[in-house]
Length: 181
Image (cartoon, rainbow, N blue to C red; front, side, top):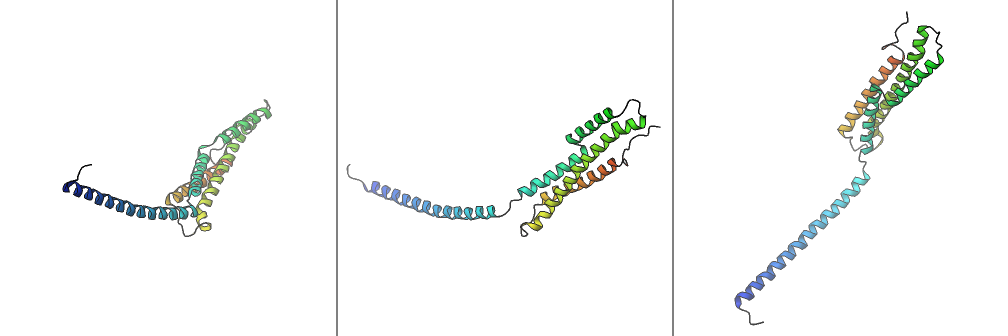
């Protein structure tokens, strides 16, 4: 309200200069940020257009899981084996020979378990091969992630081993039924 001294006027001028500098810096940062936002939008559009590999990764994990189930046995194989055991007990007469009882009660259950293990192994093998072959039919310029290849090869290997063991188990070449005599 009163008169300003020279010191107060100089202080106000310095404050105004600082405000201008801050405003200019903020506008420059906004230009840079605006450029970054544009670049991020372009990168996001390119990412959306390019395949992410999530499906291939999921397929590789499914292949490995199916291969593992083929080796360890699954719930379906256990239920099928129990059903065959029950059917064998119901169909076998009490006066049947021991060899016939063993085959009907335990042999059919063993083969049903082997059959389901083979189905899981074959599924693991097929899914693993499809995942490994997918880049040849998809985006040829984009390489497949190394972990996807590793897991898919693991699924293929487990599928081959599971299929081999299932065939050996089904044909009684591996742990065949004991003889009755």
